[in-house]
Amino acid sequence: MNEPVNQPNTAPDGAPDNPLTGHDYDGIQEYDNPLPGWWKWLFIASILFGPPYFFFYHNGAEGRSVSDRYERNLAANLKLQFDELGDLKADRAAVIKYTYEPDWLKSGKAVFKTHCVSCHGKDGGGVIGPNLTDEAYKNIRDIGDILKVLQNGANAGAMPAWKNRLSTPEIVLVSSYVASLRGTTPSTEPKEPEGRSIPPWPGPPAEEESKTADAPEANGEATAAALDTETSNSESAGE
Ligand code: HEC
Image (cartoon, rainbow, N blue to C red; front, side, top):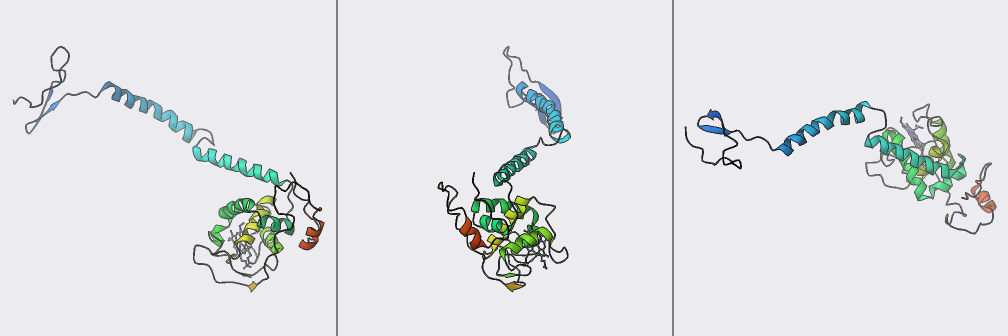
């Protein structure tokens, strides 16, 4: 038996603490080097840690995973936002108002992403449903019609009705978002225009210069007339 070239580690008393195992593979011998203690404990600790961790996140109650928590927070945040909207009425004036409020359009976009992209495309360029970015519409002559199509659907349910599936703020905000898509360029190849070209949307309501305007303006009467609201003129949305 050849002496191994590498000197074995030696214990404090000088005696080798890792004698050869006696395995011999074509002259290649093997030391009996145990793994360091800290490594073994880490290994054992990770085994002990694993099952409880698994049960906590996968077999335990709902809502423990990071993504569940994220969704909960997102929903809570959305609810906060919607509380801020108060008892929003689903009417033409509201659709116009929020079409010109970029922050609220983001909420509308979130609704669109969740419920509408499958048929209307990521940026509204159209898939099964028509292109919402061009000037031609099938069921819409006026901005208020977007709301009606959203609520009641169109073409015998090819466009589903959302009245019972989305909350009022969601319907209003996604309507505003749809209105805001007009004239934008979708990232994907847009669908051919369908329907008829319609006149441009009405401009922003006059009172909406800025939300921070502290001086209450002439109580929105001129605005309401200008908007030609049917019944309800939104009471200037104060805090
Ligand atoms: C199942 C597919 C589908 C989904 C989901 C869907 N739509 Fe539609 N949508 C359609 C179809 C199809 C039409 C065209 C109806 C017609 O032919 O008159 C349409 C029409 C419309 C129109 C009218 C367009 C026009 O030119 O008259 C609007 C606005 C609209 N959808 C918005 C939405 C919004 C907002 C959502 C999400 C809340 C949504 N749609 C979800 C299929 C869908």
